[in-house]
View: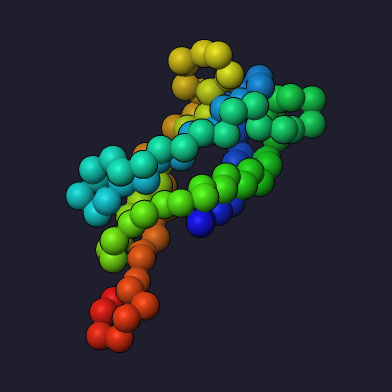
Amino acid sequence: PVTFELDVVPNESVPTPVIEINVHDSSGFHLFGSTSRGVKLGGGVLDRPATIALHIPRLPLQVGRFSLSVSARPIGQSAIYHHLEFCNEFSVFSQEAGFG
């Protein structure tokens, strides 16, 4: 399991937001995506800095470097209000000796 905690500072308000996280490998290939529908925020609007936690129960990755892309949009709409491409990187290491 993995939990990504995001500090979000919106440039404009997002009513009833859906936060989407996508995981890419080091070549930029999309591996996984997860959304948090209807994130619980005071007033139901993402209009001020907030920390949002998205828990992924199982994220099967091999050893390597990966990056995250994050977007925010209103629930039930396709218009994206905020999008950060390859905004953070993380690495996965083997627990076996001699790897990683």
